[in-house]
Image 1: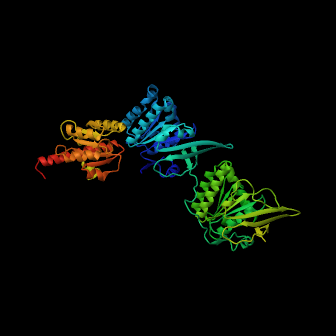
Image 2 (image 1 turned 180 degrees about the vertical axis):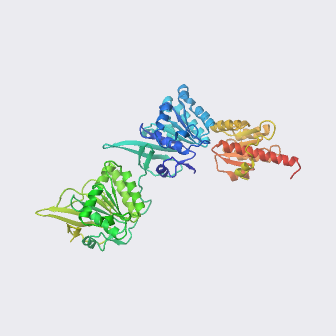
Image 3 (image 1 turned 60 degrees about the horizontal axis):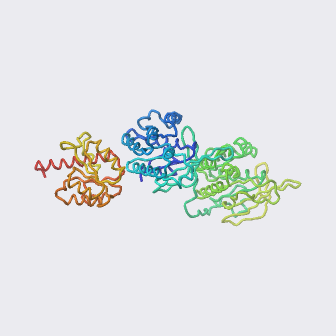
Length: 455
Length: 152
């Protein structure tokens, strides 16, 4: 099936390569969700002088307004207007005789011979034909016209989600794309979802996107491996903390994920840094995803341990991705993580901490989905990871904290605890390992001038 | 012979109609939106266009009008487009009519096996349709001239 690009690379990926060239599609969503920008990107990506993109406005927005705002968008080359991309208004026709829609579109189609035809807003047209039977006929005729001609049709409308099951246009459409906007805390998040795409696979679920002058930037949702489990490689690697490595046969299995749980101050971040440093020393590039400490704070901490930071932070060594979880969506963060992993050939990853990602996810089930997909993807790539999880406050008998349970998704769990008796003492124990014999007893963890020592 | 190679044989400004007056096209098609587009683009290209909405009417009209070319969809009621084509090609009175099967179905082999001169898949791309019709008529015309000159 031949496809046309939407002009948005990541959306094309979600659609399995773009929209089928000969199809009728609906882009739906409430006002302000980004529908018109998406439609305009499609228009500019496909319009040529021979087979232009024809953009038909109806009675929701004056043509002049659409074109005025269009010029604010970087992809909209005004020099191409009138040749590659042509705007026409159906307002006069529709006000006079709404049922004349198909005739009006046919005349424009014969005149312009477009490769893409967009009607925005299609729903506003429906509002002019309140009789359901007459609206059904109009939709049927128009779909027939667009199917007869070699053209991609896109109907844009401010439909609520429930409309999909009720209105005839959704039954005739080959593809349906829904755009949503939600408030999570103080943040405004946007998602799009493919509801239907005839004759084609697509990536399901909600995909985050952002809007800017460049148009839409879409972050496809991570998907778990297609089938089967990925068995960890039977290769052992070390954390660089001798006492800890001795607790679990001769080290951790490559490609596994380890949850490091404990209260603030128990040594979780430092344990992660040891793990990454040991990898870099052995020629394995590492990535620290860090929401807690700024790069300068981190550098100071490593320097105080007299680690060779220049050597450690060299381009093929340790990459630090520091970001504020308040400003970013989880999709954006995870996409950046995967890009850095690919770019640097990363073999070891530390995420510090999961709680921040949970905040960025907004809700618990979304968070679980992401962590599951992430750990599966890392396992598939044979990347060994440590996921730091902030436990409850100072505790004698540390418990894995209630709330979103991600413990079942990790291969190993390390529990760090602190006793505040006369002296502060730190402890570590292994509570779970997959595929390894381990010492489950409590060991003393000390932090000295050079880092962590486990006794 | 493929349509692409046919198209290459036609000079860009070669007249659409080798005979005096307009060439007549009979379109066998029942979809109203498709008929609307076929009428517009074929008339715009200078052809005379007649329509039949089903296969039986198409065959009867072809026998009566003897058009230069029949453009037929396979999926029409009464008698399918391929049967119309076979009937036209079996009758010495209509054998010379060029038949273009223009269908929603991917049926090139079946069309050629039924004796069609060419096959074109829908949807309608006006450039391809008009060029195909022009190329078929030009070839047909050359064939006639060849016979008139006594060439093989």
